Image 1 (cartoon, protein in one colour):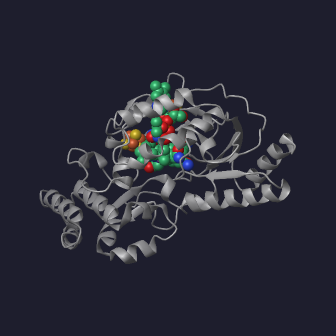
Image 2 (cartoon, rainbow, N blue to C red):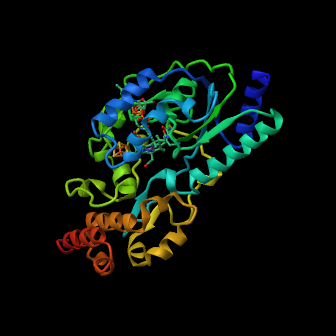
Image 3 (cartoon, helix red, strand yellow):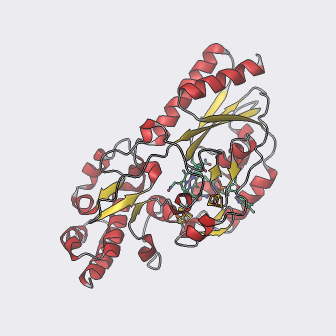
Length: 341
Ligand code: B12
Ligand code: SF4
Ligand code: SF4
């Protein structure tokens, strides 16, 4: 098989699928990056994401995922779209990555189509596709493949796109010419470190998920710590503050990630009143589903408590009858704040 023909075909297929950039990294040990991952896990920065610790070995060694793995092709799909105007009132802000279709589906399908096309054109080629949920250290490979640089926000930044890209990888069992490293970094900027509302960015590139609103509002099950609730402001799902503060602004992203009506700002009373199963059905194909109905309702209570408008009391009363004690507790906390005005 001709390595340059495979690299060229991969690039062409990726462009046709809407990826903005592709790079190739030769598989060699991720020594420095695995030390960072170990330090992160050792400090407990993964919070309740026990799967991050369980998958540590596979994460630092793609060779364990595919026999004869030789190259990691890294692809970036832009997702930014302009934020729809704030409707105000009893609404909560959703993180930009979750306004449109779920990237796991959109990018996952694109990767599968690429795998099929490569296998047809180069019979015998082996590949392993990943987007987010598989044990691949995506940001580390993105930097190695010359796509971008590791920002102080811990995100990977691409020239011309900033951090507003999803990353995906295709581990391949063929040796492709490695892309040159990118000579770029954050320079003297440290805006994201100052912009983080909770101090979750404890040092450049080091994020403590226990304090990160993205983790707490999406991945975390159970109570949101009381000292963090007021700082959530109107963030009902995810947080963009570190990325928003970044001077590297993006062009419009893939159309699949344009905001669905009502998904950039959620109507919180409506969210508290809808039945859990009906809510999950309505959120089919949206990243918002990840928090689960109880997680979203818990977050909605916190945001209503932060808005502090007594007009929220009837929907908070409904939430106080929810079967999940976490939703009930957060609804009581919020109602108390609304009564205080
Ligand atoms: C766990 C996880 C989370 C956790 C923890 C995030 C984190 N920073 O570790 C939580 C839930 C908080 C999270 C949030 C978000 N996530 Co997330 N997440 C992941 C996941 C599954 C693993 C990340 C990981 O390995 N963390 C371990 C730490 C050690 O790794 P890291 O932060 O990536 O490490 C890099 C830098 O921080 C730096 N570094 C780390 N330690 C050190 C130490 C020193 C001394 C130095 C100098 C540098 C340094 O180097 C590493 C390589 O670049 C990846 C998918 C994947 N399979 O990789 C997606 C991923 C990282 N997430 C992604 C996204 C989009 C988000 C959010 C924007 C979503 C949102 N708005 O709510 C936020 C961004 C928050 C942020 N500032 O990181 C994208 C990132 C795209 C990008 N351009 O970087 C990924 C790649 C998913 C994807 N396939 O697109 N995420
Ligand atoms: S996502 Fe929000 S809370 Fe998390 S590190 Fe970025 S600014 Fe801080
Ligand atoms: S805000 Fe500044 S320091 Fe943070 S990631 Fe962007 S360029 Fe880097």
